[in-house]
Image 1: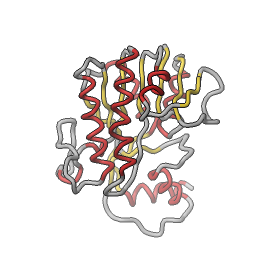
Image 2: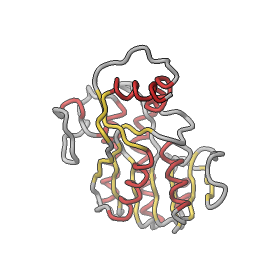
Image 3: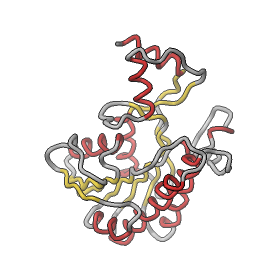
Length: 243
Protein backbone atom coordinates (compact mmCIF):
# COMPACT_ATOMS: atom_id res chain seq x y z
CA UNK A 1 0.00 0.00 0.00
CA UNK A 2 1.23 3.51 -0.74
CA UNK A 3 1.27 5.56 2.45
CA UNK A 4 2.31 9.18 3.02
CA UNK A 5 3.71 10.64 6.24
CA UNK A 6 4.07 14.37 6.90
CA UNK A 7 6.73 15.33 9.43
CA UNK A 8 8.47 12.07 8.50
CA UNK A 9 11.87 13.23 9.83
CA UNK A 10 10.52 13.97 13.31
CA UNK A 11 10.48 11.78 16.40
CA UNK A 12 7.18 9.95 15.94
CA UNK A 13 7.42 10.28 12.16
CA UNK A 14 10.78 8.49 12.00
CA UNK A 15 9.50 5.59 14.06
CA UNK A 16 6.32 5.44 11.99
CA UNK A 17 8.21 5.38 8.67
CA UNK A 18 10.38 2.47 9.79
CA UNK A 19 7.37 0.53 11.10
CA UNK A 20 5.43 1.04 7.86
CA UNK A 21 8.39 -0.16 5.79
CA UNK A 22 8.71 -3.30 7.94
CA UNK A 23 4.99 -3.90 7.37
CA UNK A 24 5.64 -3.88 3.62
CA UNK A 25 4.20 -0.49 2.67
CA UNK A 26 5.59 1.98 0.15
CA UNK A 27 6.18 5.23 2.05
CA UNK A 28 6.23 8.79 0.76
CA UNK A 29 8.16 10.70 3.43
CA UNK A 30 7.14 14.37 3.40
CA UNK A 31 9.30 16.90 5.23
CA UNK A 32 11.47 19.97 4.68
CA UNK A 33 14.57 17.83 4.11
CA UNK A 34 15.38 14.09 3.95
CA UNK A 35 16.58 12.21 7.03
CA UNK A 36 19.66 10.01 7.07
CA UNK A 37 18.04 7.65 9.58
CA UNK A 38 15.20 6.50 7.31
CA UNK A 39 15.47 2.93 5.95
CA UNK A 40 17.54 2.67 2.78
CA UNK A 41 14.68 1.10 0.83
CA UNK A 42 10.95 1.64 0.43
CA UNK A 43 11.05 5.39 1.19
CA UNK A 44 10.54 8.18 -1.34
CA UNK A 45 11.33 11.64 -0.02
CA UNK A 46 9.13 14.54 -1.11
CA UNK A 47 9.87 18.09 0.02
CA UNK A 48 6.56 19.53 1.12
CA UNK A 49 5.04 22.51 2.90
CA UNK A 50 1.88 21.77 4.88
CA UNK A 51 0.77 25.38 4.47
CA UNK A 52 0.97 25.19 0.65
CA UNK A 53 -2.07 23.44 -0.94
CA UNK A 54 -0.36 22.79 -4.29
CA UNK A 55 2.68 21.30 -2.54
CA UNK A 56 0.52 18.92 -0.51
CA UNK A 57 -1.69 17.88 -3.42
CA UNK A 58 1.42 16.88 -5.39
CA UNK A 59 2.93 15.05 -2.41
CA UNK A 60 -0.25 13.07 -1.67
CA UNK A 61 -1.01 12.03 -5.24
CA UNK A 62 -1.58 8.25 -5.32
CA UNK A 63 -1.47 7.73 -1.54
CA UNK A 64 -4.15 5.59 0.08
CA UNK A 65 -3.45 6.70 3.66
CA UNK A 66 -1.91 9.91 4.98
CA UNK A 67 -0.49 10.19 8.50
CA UNK A 68 -0.23 13.86 9.46
CA UNK A 69 2.51 14.26 12.06
CA UNK A 70 3.62 17.88 11.58
CA UNK A 71 3.27 20.10 14.65
CA UNK A 72 5.13 22.84 16.47
CA UNK A 73 5.45 22.34 20.22
CA UNK A 74 5.96 25.40 22.39
CA UNK A 75 5.41 26.46 25.98
CA UNK A 76 4.56 30.02 24.96
CA UNK A 77 1.22 31.61 25.66
CA UNK A 78 1.11 33.12 22.16
CA UNK A 79 2.98 32.08 19.01
CA UNK A 80 1.62 32.91 15.56
CA UNK A 81 3.82 30.40 13.74
CA UNK A 82 2.77 27.53 16.03
CA UNK A 83 -0.88 28.54 15.75
CA UNK A 84 -0.83 28.57 11.94
CA UNK A 85 1.13 25.34 11.61
CA UNK A 86 -1.02 23.45 14.11
CA UNK A 87 -4.34 24.70 12.75
CA UNK A 88 -4.17 25.67 9.09
CA UNK A 89 -1.50 23.05 8.46
CA UNK A 90 -4.05 20.40 9.39
CA UNK A 91 -6.70 22.04 7.21
CA UNK A 92 -4.42 22.28 4.15
CA UNK A 93 -3.35 18.64 4.40
CA UNK A 94 -6.94 17.50 4.90
CA UNK A 95 -8.23 19.50 1.94
CA UNK A 96 -5.41 18.13 -0.25
CA UNK A 97 -6.18 14.57 0.87
CA UNK A 98 -9.84 15.03 0.00
CA UNK A 99 -9.06 16.56 -3.39
CA UNK A 100 -6.64 13.85 -4.58
CA UNK A 101 -8.75 10.98 -3.24
CA UNK A 102 -6.77 9.72 -0.24
CA UNK A 103 -8.79 6.90 1.31
CA UNK A 104 -8.10 7.82 4.96
CA UNK A 105 -6.27 10.45 6.98
CA UNK A 106 -4.87 9.85 10.46
CA UNK A 107 -4.15 13.10 12.30
CA UNK A 108 -1.70 12.90 15.19
CA UNK A 109 -2.97 15.54 17.60
CA UNK A 110 -2.09 15.52 21.32
CA UNK A 111 -3.50 14.97 24.78
CA UNK A 112 -2.97 18.73 25.09
CA UNK A 113 -6.06 19.34 22.97
CA UNK A 114 -7.96 18.25 26.10
CA UNK A 115 -8.17 20.61 29.07
CA UNK A 116 -5.77 19.03 31.57
CA UNK A 117 -5.98 21.99 33.92
CA UNK A 118 -9.59 21.41 34.93
CA UNK A 119 -10.17 17.65 34.66
CA UNK A 120 -9.73 16.54 38.31
CA UNK A 121 -6.94 14.19 37.26
CA UNK A 122 -9.01 12.13 34.83
CA UNK A 123 -9.37 12.33 31.05
CA UNK A 124 -11.21 10.41 28.39
CA UNK A 125 -12.23 11.18 24.82
CA UNK A 126 -15.31 13.04 26.05
CA UNK A 127 -13.45 15.39 28.43
CA UNK A 128 -13.56 19.20 28.00
CA UNK A 129 -11.23 20.66 25.38
CA UNK A 130 -8.54 23.35 25.45
CA UNK A 131 -10.67 26.40 24.66
CA UNK A 132 -9.80 28.88 27.40
CA UNK A 133 -7.55 31.80 26.33
CA UNK A 134 -5.61 31.23 29.57
CA UNK A 135 -4.34 27.85 28.26
CA UNK A 136 -0.98 27.83 26.39
CA UNK A 137 -1.06 28.28 22.61
CA UNK A 138 0.08 24.72 21.87
CA UNK A 139 -2.90 23.24 23.71
CA UNK A 140 -5.37 25.64 22.11
CA UNK A 141 -3.90 25.20 18.64
CA UNK A 142 -4.09 21.41 18.79
CA UNK A 143 -7.80 21.61 19.62
CA UNK A 144 -8.34 24.23 16.91
CA UNK A 145 -6.53 21.99 14.42
CA UNK A 146 -8.93 19.16 15.20
CA UNK A 147 -11.85 21.51 14.57
CA UNK A 148 -10.38 22.45 11.19
CA UNK A 149 -10.12 18.75 10.34
CA UNK A 150 -13.74 18.16 11.35
CA UNK A 151 -14.81 20.78 8.79
CA UNK A 152 -13.17 18.73 6.02
CA UNK A 153 -14.60 15.49 7.42
CA UNK A 154 -18.02 17.11 7.05
CA UNK A 155 -17.19 17.59 3.35
CA UNK A 156 -16.50 13.88 2.90
CA UNK A 157 -12.96 13.14 4.09
CA UNK A 158 -12.54 9.89 6.02
CA UNK A 159 -10.26 10.83 8.93
CA UNK A 160 -9.55 9.86 12.52
CA UNK A 161 -7.66 11.67 15.29
CA UNK A 162 -5.13 10.24 17.73
CA UNK A 163 -4.06 11.99 20.93
CA UNK A 164 -0.79 10.66 22.42
CA UNK A 165 0.27 11.63 25.92
CA UNK A 166 3.95 12.27 26.82
CA UNK A 167 5.95 10.38 24.19
CA UNK A 168 9.39 8.93 24.91
CA UNK A 169 11.58 6.25 23.35
CA UNK A 170 14.15 5.53 20.62
CA UNK A 171 15.01 7.19 17.30
CA UNK A 172 14.62 10.71 18.67
CA UNK A 173 17.30 12.58 16.75
CA UNK A 174 16.11 16.05 17.71
CA UNK A 175 15.62 15.29 21.26
CA UNK A 176 12.10 15.91 22.44
CA UNK A 177 11.60 17.60 25.78
CA UNK A 178 10.72 14.34 27.55
CA UNK A 179 13.66 12.38 26.15
CA UNK A 180 16.05 15.24 26.89
CA UNK A 181 14.95 15.36 30.53
CA UNK A 182 15.36 11.60 30.88
CA UNK A 183 18.81 11.74 29.23
CA UNK A 184 19.88 14.55 31.56
CA UNK A 185 18.75 12.45 34.53
CA UNK A 186 20.69 9.47 33.18
CA UNK A 187 23.80 11.65 33.00
CA UNK A 188 23.36 12.92 36.54
CA UNK A 189 22.48 16.45 35.48
CA UNK A 190 19.11 16.81 37.23
CA UNK A 191 19.76 17.83 40.85
CA UNK A 192 16.09 18.41 41.66
CA UNK A 193 12.64 17.89 40.15
CA UNK A 194 9.22 19.35 40.73
CA UNK A 195 6.48 17.25 42.27
CA UNK A 196 3.74 15.72 40.18
CA UNK A 197 3.48 13.27 37.33
CA UNK A 198 2.35 12.71 33.78
CA UNK A 199 1.16 9.90 31.54
CA UNK A 200 4.08 8.64 29.42
CA UNK A 201 3.77 6.38 26.37
CA UNK A 202 6.48 4.60 24.36
CA UNK A 203 6.77 5.96 20.81
CA UNK A 204 6.56 2.39 19.46
CA UNK A 205 3.16 1.98 21.11
CA UNK A 206 2.08 5.31 19.61
CA UNK A 207 3.05 4.07 16.14
CA UNK A 208 1.02 0.89 16.59
CA UNK A 209 -1.91 2.98 17.84
CA UNK A 210 -1.74 5.23 14.79
CA UNK A 211 -1.78 2.28 12.39
CA UNK A 212 -4.63 0.60 14.27
CA UNK A 213 -6.59 3.85 14.06
CA UNK A 214 -6.00 3.85 10.30
CA UNK A 215 -7.29 0.30 10.10
CA UNK A 216 -10.13 0.26 12.60
CA UNK A 217 -10.91 3.81 13.76
CA UNK A 218 -14.33 5.37 13.25
CA UNK A 219 -14.51 8.45 11.07
CA UNK A 220 -14.26 11.65 13.09
CA UNK A 221 -13.45 9.93 16.39
CA UNK A 222 -10.65 10.73 18.84
CA UNK A 223 -8.42 8.03 20.33
CA UNK A 224 -6.21 8.78 23.33
CA UNK A 225 -2.91 6.88 23.01
CA UNK A 226 -1.75 6.46 26.58
CA UNK A 227 0.86 4.55 28.54
CA UNK A 228 1.32 4.79 32.30
CA UNK A 229 0.94 7.63 34.77
CA UNK A 230 4.40 8.09 36.30
CA UNK A 231 5.67 10.21 39.15
CA UNK A 232 8.34 12.51 37.69
CA UNK A 233 10.82 11.92 40.52
CA UNK A 234 10.44 8.16 40.12
CA UNK A 235 11.02 8.40 36.33
CA UNK A 236 14.17 10.51 36.74
CA UNK A 237 15.46 8.26 39.52
CA UNK A 238 14.92 5.22 37.32
CA UNK A 239 16.88 6.76 34.41
CA UNK A 240 19.74 7.71 36.74
CA UNK A 241 19.76 4.35 38.54
CA UNK A 242 19.94 2.30 35.30
CA UNK A 243 23.03 4.18 34.12
